[in-house]
Length: 158
Image 1 (cartoon, rainbow, N blue to C red):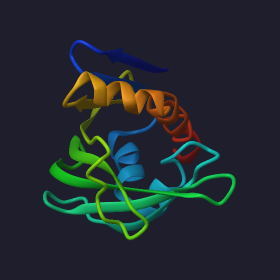
Image 2: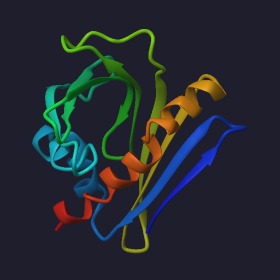
Image 3: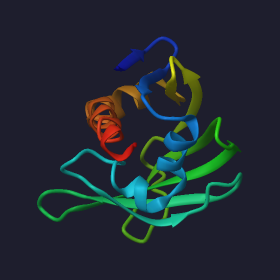
Image 4: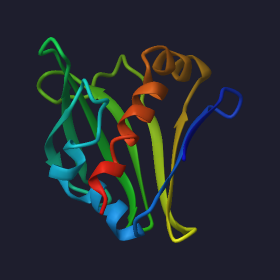
């Protein structure tokens, strides 16, 4: 089961997904950059991870390549990590050199992994600073892209 809830009043976008795999196995899809590349980004925009440091203060930088060869760069700045239970990061856009683009909105994303019904429930919640920022990212397809990305995780789990 995968669901997405957009709450414009609370400025949150929450995705909940359940997997028939252990918490550690689901965590590993985030912790291993080569596995992250196999599901992060919608199927037509696969990710290439450049830097991958899942420690507080660490950064993950990556780009997604579109069907026309166009590259879309982004970054995560890790704020909290509790392996294999949760991670939190600030998520933003970058230019071709990997430098943050200050004119684009950022959001704070928290991912929690918990045992559920013999498997794992993953809850990903993005919090936005303003309604305008949230609406801008949703208009760019953030919710559908996230759902498509997470939809690829099942095939990578045992």
